[in-house]
Image (cartoon, rainbow, N blue to C red; front, side, top):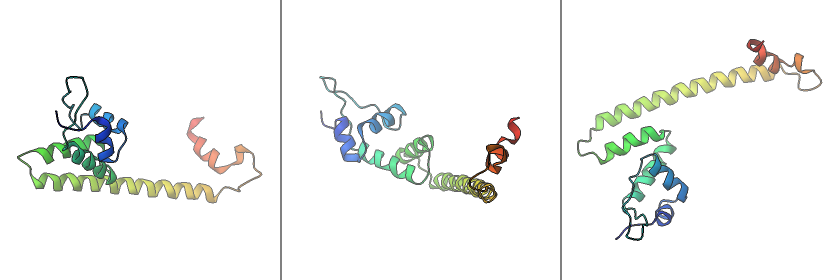
Length: 136
């Protein structure tokens, strides 16, 4: 039986063996056939799938989103307009997160600017008192 063992697949894909197992568990890659002695032998094409997964993660897609992308990439009825919409939805999600981070940074900068730095008890620390407001 031709194919790659899990360690060969991991090496060829530039990931560790646990990553391959995790992707298999998450059904991003299919469970491979086994040899008579029980070893799993992955088709060589799985290397491209794992590299696809890693690149998709690098641009911000979640594993669930990547599963959909993989299905689309293997589908004979591929529709590029669906991918365009999918990518634009991800861009909007990222923009929203960026705005949230900008807001969080602004609030934290304001708290830090009001902090004397040292020599005050915790009940006079603007960071602690502001974060504790609704806890009492």
